[in-house]
Length: 144
Image (cartoon, rainbow, N blue to C red; front, side, top):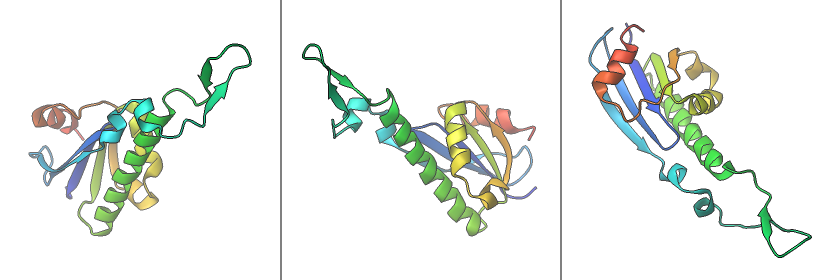
């Protein structure tokens, strides 16, 4: 087996592991944090230009889609992780890649991978295991 990286991610945090042998021990090599993904929508929005004055009464309604700011931050983090993986692949730091993330974020991450990095993906698991123990993550991938 070639050197395998395992990226375990969600929209606000990711952990990167390496293993050199099938069913071998995992060693965490990096931890990524994206605190903006944890913020509430109103904390992320600095421009209230989406507020629209309603024709009846004095209330304002927000024309932006609910959750859009959080989605944008998750996309930003997915892009950053994909760029990190692309750079590492270019330096031959891994040959195989396993992606583990909650379904929505896994899709975002896949969308941002370049073709050469995507070709290294040997498995994708749509679960949020970012807060789990190394042993739990290892159990999930031992048959890959």
